[in-house]
Length: 221
Image (cartoon, rainbow, N blue to C red):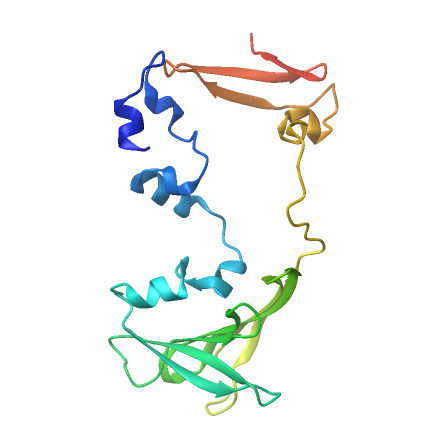
């Protein structure tokens, strides 16, 4: 929570009960920003935007415990330039353990990420498809992930252990959402037989339980 926000709290009860009542992540305290970051579910998009949930410029300028980074220009299949960001582990500095391939014509997003096991070859490969979803806005819409295991014989290429594909079916940009969409009724639950309990925290830090009954939330008796 913003420390000044808490210090100037004039409402009833404990102001920390409103610790998540912010209009943006930037307004949160560093502690709550960390809580939010750690609670985010894993997804393939963050690989496109940066390193360890930091955008590439921020991550490269920060002091990293993962080793050193270097950038290089390479040629794509069509001959046009791409950029590679290579990460080198401090304990094994000759071969990169992570390589991101950046496309400057598609929002400078990563089109591919390869995680290597030092000199033993790739452990996983993520290939992303990036599309323009609005003027000057590029976004990852699909990802293929391949995880490898040890080859059958020394010298053979690594064997594919897991292959998965994720694709977004629909993206809508700047479409207004009515407030009713964030009410429990928008879930379309059956009015009878639905076992839904909602816990609410009041200003004085008391917790109350509500249940979904006959199409609406009512206090649990």
